[in-house]
Length: 308
Image 1: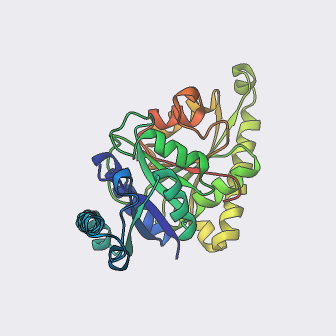
Image 2: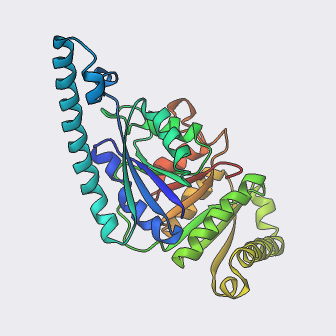
């Protein structure tokens, strides 16, 4: 069964990803792992066992017992918090496991993602690093930049999903990574019975665009046929025949076209390639495509690296 890894730091921002996790878990037929990483440096070396306590002098043993009790109380509090966050997911029939780890947030998230063979990491983010807690934009950015698996990013303040996953937008540029984008988009489309709009952007002049009506019709038809064939290969001809697929040929700056198309169709999710030059959400790449889209659209991004 696929696994969605959801790191939570106890902040309201981090929790904003949970409605979208619920939205995607059913179409992906996924179980969910809620992860909390304890980052308190004071206690990184104090997680002890009863056996280790017995090895020190009386003063050190007393201190170690106090630290152990502090850690156990802290762990119980974290477990209660994760249980509370898991309750709506479990009520929706989603299998949820809880995990508490100690360490550096980014490294631990990536390690747990590898150990539990997560198919997707889901996080909320400002898109910049000014948060009090570790669900900050910088942490989400580092995870996105380092993870060899898709990352779902939900922007702070994004509208809650209405219910079902209704419309998905997948920009395709003909590259190798676009195959993986399409594969993920098709899986979600099929699982949710959603409408899929595939978008190919033409960098032609407006004069060429207006004078090439027949060519654009042919391009749209070819793009739709390509997606329908891929759908049939994944889920069979009958399912492909019933699929709701729209092919769109856009003109202009890719980020602007994607933003406009997402707004026009009121999409619930954008599945986008996480290429090296567009994947980071750091301020120093504020002009990057993913960064512009992330801050402009009223939908989360599922960023897909090549080969996953």
